[in-house]
Image 1: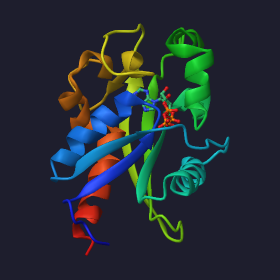
Image 2: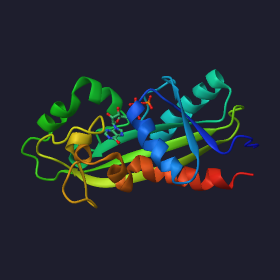
Image 3: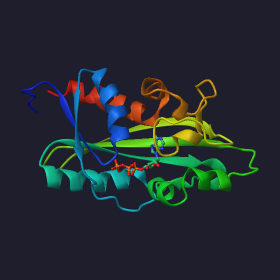
Image 4: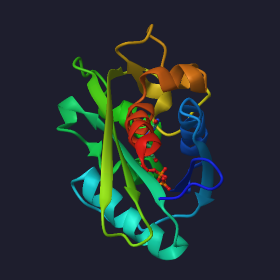
Length: 193
Ligand code: ITT
């Protein structure tokens, strides 16, 4: 691939919070990020990778650019991984309060976030996937104002007890599933010819 204007990653997403997190991570690698604000096709499937694959193929068809998309989910152990790949829908329907209700009086609060970043060239012939994970636990009550989605109830194990929503973007990026997947993408993207 030719990069006449320096390295740029086109991130197709409808979620500005995701983009703001991604922009900072990619900047660590001197990669400029451009947001293409669009809802790429989102299929319902048990696998984040299948969802990301359908999205990235839809996105390149519509944009005719090399793009990345990202699909993520919150997997709660005692709920057998729910909401997982259905996190976006569950966030819209049950929300943070719904998750807290499901988890009322539950002692084992282990959970993790998983992220899959998918990259495709405009021809859609070869898709690359990058994964990131962060282990944590579900808080007993919602705390914090920053971030989005389930951030107010997710406490990363590597942190100091604060939820993601109580952290700045930089702090969240130190641990987050998305930042980890994007760093793997950035390492690879930097090395492209
Ligand atoms: P796209 O347009 O990029 O698809 P989206 O918000 O629909 O944006 P996803 O399909 O990946 O994104 O949905 C994942 C859902 O999981 C998201 O709406 C949140 O509710 C939750 N989620 C994912 N990552 C999260 C994070 O870092 N913090 C909090 N919640 C997160």
